[in-house]
Amino acid sequence: MKKSAIPDPFEQTRLEKGVGEMNEQNDPIVMVLRHKDVRRCAHKWQTFQSGAQPGRIVIPSEVAIRDTRQIPFELDPPQHGAYRTLVEAWFKRPLQEAYQAQLSQQINAIVDEALSRDQVEVVSEFSLPLQSRALTLLLNIPYSEAATWISWGTHVFRSEDDPLDKSKANILYDYIDRQIDQAIKNPGEDLYSVLLNSEIEGHKLNREEVKGVMILTFAGGRDTVINAVTNSIAYFADHPESLELIRKQPDITGKAVEELIRYFAPLTHMGRVATQDTQVCEHAVKADSRISLCWASANRDASVFENPNEVILDRKINPHVSFGFSHHNCLGATHARQILKTLLQVLAQKVQSIDLLATEDNIEEWGNFKRKVGYHQINVHFNAK
Image (cartoon, rainbow, N blue to C red):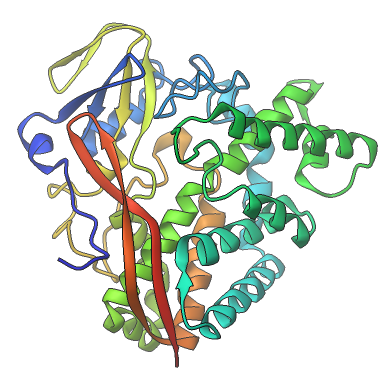
């Protein structure tokens, strides 16, 4: 097995039962594993809600480390739609030529830097800086601010000893509070200022609402983008012929991005809270208990994807759910897609091959399931084209 491979630990249970079970922080979860069931449950917001106690739909639960509701992520229709409409145009800005030109400049610079070095640790020295610098474009703030975010390390809420570190989470919350204060005193064209000047249902967004959008923006696209970038580098190290394919057939780059996102599923799953007694795959789900929509399992469902455990860069039909499904489709998906598309274009242009020197897998444990989601660290050498 190639070192970049991401095995599917859910296959047998998905085929036999359709659901798995786990207990997380004394709050049991029914894991929905089949593609059709994941999409159905994601669509049934009246039965499986997002607007529960703040932090409860995230897995692991963040109830113990925050009471600010992430917006629009932790809202259900019709509120969700109103807030999403308010911010959606801003999050579509990565489609603009000027945005793409700046992003290309950033990614060219980080690849050039990697090519100049004998060895690069991809997670902390490549993916984290890439993600942080790109975020300055999404927030429309100075590039220099990325240095602060890089200093926080790879995870916003997690430390080496604690998967949910409240003191570390408070670094982010306090930072956002300071940025909101600055935007109030000196409004500009950044996302903080835009939100503070926006109206929803006849009132200006209040401080807590702005903070909710910003926590989602910082936390939602951090680990996921870092995992996607790191896994992509590992994949091309193992499969130099794939990099050559993109070089020769640049028109498949968009499909390649979707396929890498499907296969890697940078976020394993996301929760919902049942509003009533119900069932999934004939498995009872009690009111006020949690389910998880297991994106990683759904993306390997052989009833939907031919050869699901293979990366097929020009896959023709690819209804993956790595960015969620239905009304809660990931708000940052356009930004993430543009990052990966630009990265693949730059790698194909400048990198001949990548030598994989050493790896340490990042293994998540969800009940009886153990899933590789990426790497704690991975050392490589980039060979120039």
